[in-house]
Length: 70
Image 1 (spheres, rainbow, N blue to C red):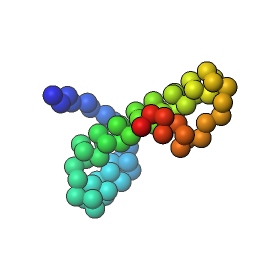
Image 2 (cartoon, rainbow, N blue to C red):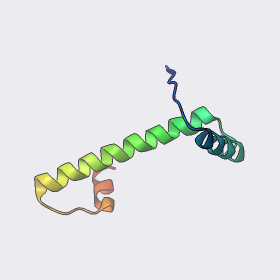
Image 3 (cartoon, helix red, strand yellow):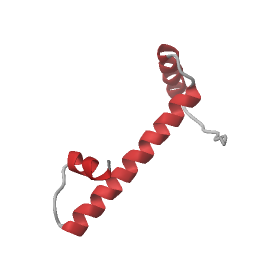
Image 4 (cartoon, one colour):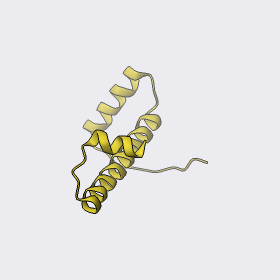
């Protein structure tokens, strides 16, 4: 099931969004949805990385964290 989200963006951001969607041949909905998914993944990754470093007192590289969660 899909849901609707209304956002407010600057005219410059809208122009850049439309340029990319036309160039890539994708909808603005798809691009924005993918951007949100990527942001959420990155946020979860950083939270997990911080947690692991505090818990284990070991410094992990981003690659090592990615291997742990993959």
